[in-house]
Length: 139
Image (cartoon, rainbow, N blue to C red; front, side, top):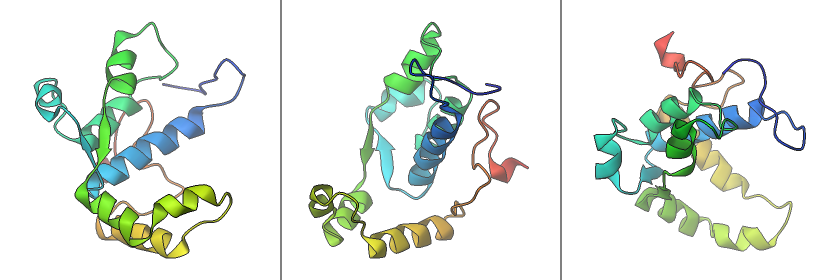
């Protein structure tokens, strides 16, 4: 994928796609997310959420004529793990959905520390490059 991707409303989605791919990758690497129907995805060569993120980075999500876009951007079901649920419960994140604009800073600090421990820290540099699917670690 080169250049920018634009949706029907004319919004540039390149940055949004990069954020989605990197978040999926981070959460997979840190054990916050898993794929449903893991056996089906393993038969497709997708062993975990991190591998899925690398495949997603190679596909333009706006190219609905490409069957791979439907298979990989739309079909996968990604679920939170027990770690994700325990963090959500620990910080009572459900209560924040009713407080627009209010964030739980201690939760953010813990998530950032988790990302750091797994080598996927926040950065302006993409973790997985859109187009190639290469990761920062590949360089």
